Amino acid sequence: MTRQATPPAQGPSGPAHESEHLQRTLTNRHIQLIAIGGAIGTGLFMGSGKTISLAGPSIVFVYMVIGFVLFFVMRAMGELLLSDLRYKSFLDFSADLLGPWAGFFTGWTYWFCWIVTGIADVIAISAYSQFWFPQLPQWAPALACVGLLLSLNLLTVKLFGEIEFWFAMIKIVAIVALVGTGLYMVATHFVSPAGHEASLRHLWNDGGMFPHGLMGFFAGFQIAVFAFSGIELVGTTAAEAKDPERSLPRAINSIPIRIIIFYVLALIAIMAVTPWREVVPGKSPFVELFVLAGLPAAAGVINFVVLTSAASSANSGVFSTSRMLYGLAIKGDAPGAFQKLSRQKVPSRGLLFSCTCLLAGAVLMWIIPDLVEAFTLVTTVSAILFMFTWSMILLSYIAYRRQRPERHAASIYRMPGGVAMCGVCLAFFAFILGLLALEADTRQALIATPLWFALLAAAYGLMRPRSLQADAAVAGGGMAPGAVPGPGTSR
Image 1: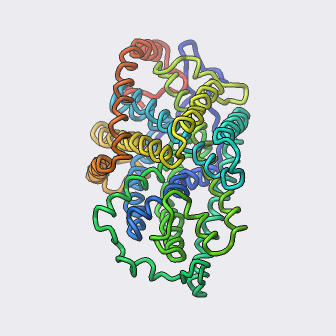
Image 2 (image 1 turned 90 degrees about the vertical axis):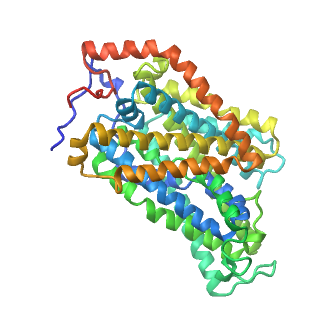
Image 3 (image 1 turned 30 degrees about the vertical axis):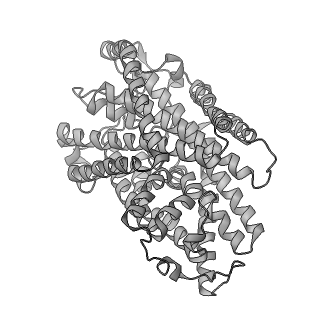
């Protein structure tokens, strides 16, 4: 079966005006680096210290397991997005395959995911800024970051791609340099000022690979999941990718290699130079590695790198939340003002709203002065919400296999393992939720998160009449801009 090119979307009164469409200006170069940037999150740089203290050397296996599971989630998303290029993101295919409620819950939850993650990022930016400016008020760097990102994202979509390209490049160079430095120290038997000789033996000579047993190993999953938040960001760029059928598979297929290089090798390098018991939970081990090795100037450089990583994640959040609000508004699930694009084809009103919400990070730092405690609380909420989004992708894939068998048969990019692998991934997410209930600091977030879904359920009841009006407009005058055909629509 050959998929036909999708015609321009039609509005109730004829062809949609050009200004109503997001533009496909992101090239393969942008998509690849955005995907890498999404796979290297703030959680790796700031949260890995605590995960190492919880799990010891077995944290390496934690990241490998999570990366393995999420690779299949991304493959499911890739097959769905490429099954119909009118799907602009997982908001579209979840609404089409599972029903309008799924699009509403997925879209708003993903928006909230990135708002919460963005708050975590501005907290991290404030923490990193203390390295150079310990007397600076904690809210000042957060405010400056949000203002800068808003200004840059209001310009053009391509500028977002360029910003993410260079942010991701900085992270790649830094991690490759860290791995290379660690290997050099091991090869030369480097001895730190603390008297520790760099050696791979640190991975197993202090209590073994699982020094805290299985419970310590399981505890590492709680925070490590957050490090992968944003890995699905490549799916929200589909509507603005020039050649999605080429760029999306390449970006998704390279995920396993990224996990090995950017997570596994980086953590091995850290624990080979710094024995895992010496890693301070409240500090970034990426910075501390060079401090303990007697290279304070390099520590300043790495601190700059992890600060740009947090800024990159916040930049991704600003981008994705504005696009999700745009999609929700088109479907009638958000105020219509959010579907208006600026002259630069940017959803500027969504950007302004999302950035205003990010300023809540400054308020949270005033309420909870302990940055590590605030970061843990926010990242746990974010991880739960991201797992919901990933689960909706899997449930959409299961529905797709049942409702569209002919599209799966014709797919050029099939998910390995199919429906059975979806079941394995969903069981894994349920397992992680159980683990979050075991620790007091993550249990609080687990208890609070259902309030979000209760709020969504109430909002859906109020917004549903608008959604029905939008559906009626599509049925009466053709597809609205950005809309996708329903289950019974001929494609």
